Length: 335
Image (cartoon, rainbow, N blue to C red):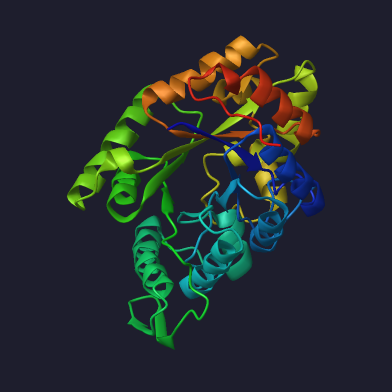
């Protein structure tokens, strides 16, 4: 089943504006919401919404749409036990419609808040340990955990989730996709790469799942895609470059990039052409239909759309009406 989602731009919009858009996303028929968990935005003019407070409010303001992080890092700013508790509480507020997206982090957030930024190999070991602890705590049992990086002593979640919360693990390269397949319940990645990269990602993800004795065909494959769909494309590109250019910087995982100003300075190399190449910037619904279809054909079944348009409600309504309705399992508007 193909599911369509909306990216809540927590680095661009104030929390109240995002809440209104979350309601509009549900009304427009989107299936899920993904919000990033960032300490810093990409731009000095941006926002820094704390996603866990916002997700609780969104759970109270919506009824059907699935909610989750895209993605949170449970290894430096947070102890894994804190993320286990946060996600468990959210699942109680929105039963059956919560997922947890996890990743190894970005220096823009983790180094800025903690002064810590271990090498990728250590961060991956940390997240493996974090996953084990989070799942153990979700059982509601008393957990004394003695890992290399994290410890608990008779810790227990007295408000555990009533059912398992799926973990979607972030991957940008095939090696980490194998890890996602082996240790996660689904894959989370982003657009902007060549089709061959996604073939390799999905193949590695499936191999990791098979090694763990899981059926990859039952595991969600999530991709976050940048799109701009409106008549004023120049304004759309201006907004994208204003708030999000830093997110295109290949070195965003470098500890030297730990503030919005540094991100923006490095993001100056990003051009409107680069933004157009990385997503779909077009006023033509047909262009967007073709863009979406290529990712479904690649094997992704959860497609999350991110637009920098100031009027998010207008984007959500138009994209659902003009683009998503063309697919075999269209998003049916909820009233």
